[in-house]
Length: 199
Image (cartoon, rainbow, N blue to C red; front, side):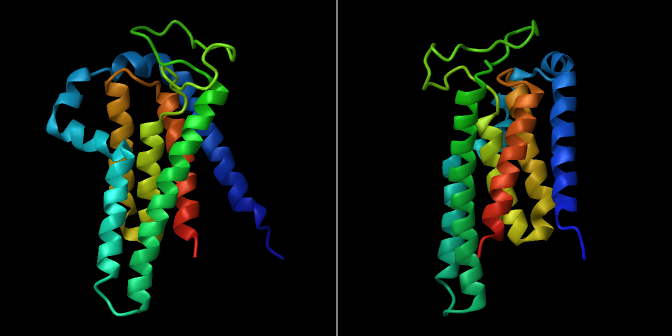
């Protein structure tokens, strides 16, 4: 009898290891990866917009429109389900990131790393403004990318690289720590994977 808990345990340990490693290099990454001008370039805007939920809703709309072009068939249903998976992944991934911010309450970085700052629960308890852990843009980018990549695995390298680029733009802007981005990527990837596997 095979152990079905094995792979999920290893994935969990890998995710925890990545998050821990990101925290360890946060002080270095905050200074080394700050490049605000990158967000004023076309490629920077392209990568950043992948963290904008309406971008993925437009992609989902493309899949839905393509599904209308076929008679009722497996291909038609596949396109329609991919569109649904993208919407579910992006909405769930984005909401989970916002809820996690309200629970973790770690503030965005300043110019220099002086240690993590946390907001008290009594201070603006339902506002995520100025909270950074996890990065919502990165969560949305990875949720959409993972949903499509789960259904079309050959697209995974390019889609996940673009989603990682979105996370980089958030660090270039000095708006997030590396650990914020890794946390958003992990949460978004999980939401996208689950939505993409949904039948």
